[in-house]
Image 1 (cartoon, helix red, strand yellow):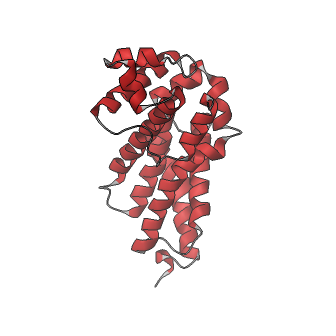
Image 2: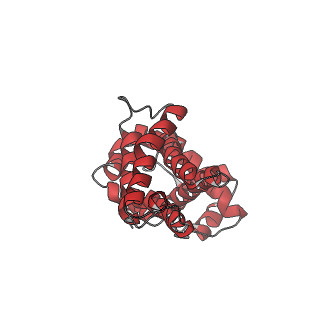
Image 3: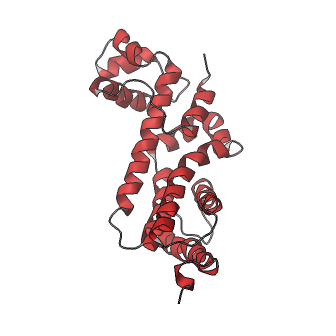
Length: 222
């Protein structure tokens, strides 16, 4: 059986996976599992307790999630998707590509920095989570890199972004967001919503758009 540590890495690296069954019962089990993880952590998660809290029997739980690792995987994927959906909703109706890029960066920092389950697991099981967010960060960063890359591609397709390397641009933005989440403080106001957005606009997005213009993007056109 895979260890919880490996489960975390695998789940983070594949946010499009489909663990378990997608129905109301499975969702209730995942809600209960999330609550148990937030209270006791991953290592002390017990399948019996999850089933009991959700109001179902062990057999019902095991029909949908065959192992504890699979259940943990499913909870993490559910949280990743919910967070990404919240960020997408926050930028959908913004007027300009610049505004969407600023909000995507700022919302990513805010959502991850304040995520209750992540912060709780870091608090009670730092030896389990922190290695995957530091020395193992490429696994975690890949989750956020994909939607950021898609947003940049939308800017390319709409003519708002010039022929820059979108993979590198997404990588830089996500690595900077990652740093602000793990090591807040200093002159960058990462914990202040308005200050974070000023920083994102002035020091992240505008330089990217300037680079785009130098590469022949919209701002460079007559």
